[in-house]
Length: 321
Image (tube, rainbow, N blue to C red; front, side, top):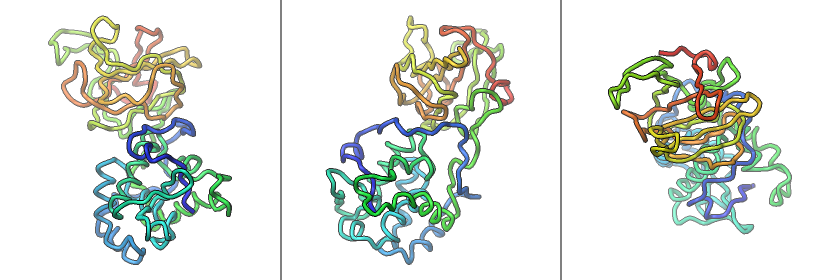
């Protein structure tokens, strides 16, 4: 069954809906790889998978371009197309079951169909924090959907995970982003490059107290909400706004904790003011905007909206620097 109900504009331009988000309690995958899926391994797997023979390089190329695990894409494509033999993939070059107005989209080549599938997953799922079969299924293949007349969607997670096991598991989200305090660590694979300490500002050269933690991360890495909350600020922090120097910045209010968290220097903001967010939801991408010497996330925990910062390190269960 080809079960993704989405308009073609969503594939090309939409940022995707934010419903059906992860609760953020853990980023552990149900099927985890010990290493990254390589082209030789994938080529061997696809050798007997119908039209997908010879497409390993395409899956890996666009997976890397859009930051989507190729193993996840291939597993979904195998399940959606019956190992590359369905009519939709043979006749329409549509490996992901992308649909609109009740019919499947057609692509001029299989490579273009694979790219469209990966772009859709990136924009409407991965950047929304939906990065495992368990998180993706309620939106991608909802049980009881109008186009699921045979009721096959209830087997979607089992089917996709079955292919993931054959592929060696997911090479992403293999580590937990869960901290030991009330907040989760807002990035994967955290490396603290500057702690909650007195220092000389590397941009201005002025002595200051650094009021948060800096997590060194590659540009474009996901930034996650540390807890449930409401976005109060999502803007470029210009001088006089109270957020000057932070670059693209997001401030989230956490009513349960009566605290605020701040996420600075983003390359791209993915949320808007007054938007409700869930713990673990992707709210932006790492960058180096504002007063910054390189790509990183500046993260603060505040006890007042405009200040009274506390050291995030013991709260998150990480070592400061």
